[in-house]
Length: 193
Image (cartoon, rainbow, N blue to C red; front, side):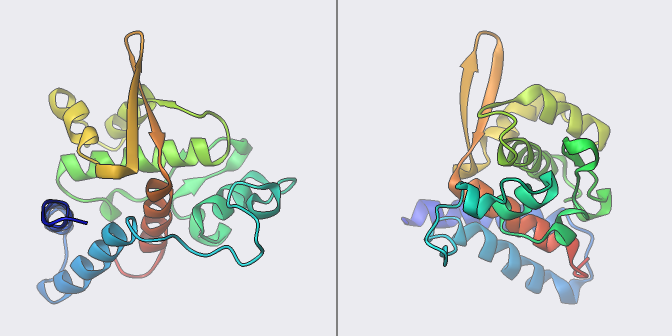
């Protein structure tokens, strides 16, 4: 990782912390946790102790309920998952509290886009997720900044890759993106905020 990448991660971490209403004595702890999430995305991921790749039936919980499948893909427990993503009916719906998201729109849009795409792709519903669904989630949560949506989401670093299909923009969650989504779910489901 070069200096430019480190500086970018530090800026993103500071931006996220600035958008969270925290007591001043908790800001450094929150920044440390967020930087841990951002920097671990570039390091080797969690080891798979059973020797199966993360997307294999053995690891993903094939044959189990959708919540267990998605939780396994994201490296969280179904109990943690339910605080952020509701799986009623087998379709993922974001239910994370608005207060858990950054106050500033740009980082909140990045978080919602990542969680939306990771939940759909983690269940195997699609390989590439249309940005329209993420845009709608941002609108529902009251953080949509329509003129800056695309540029804000594109600044998500190496968590997402983009492609165009006609007039539609699609995103694909990368391995670091799935890891980051899992860490966000762990953070949001805890008592930290």
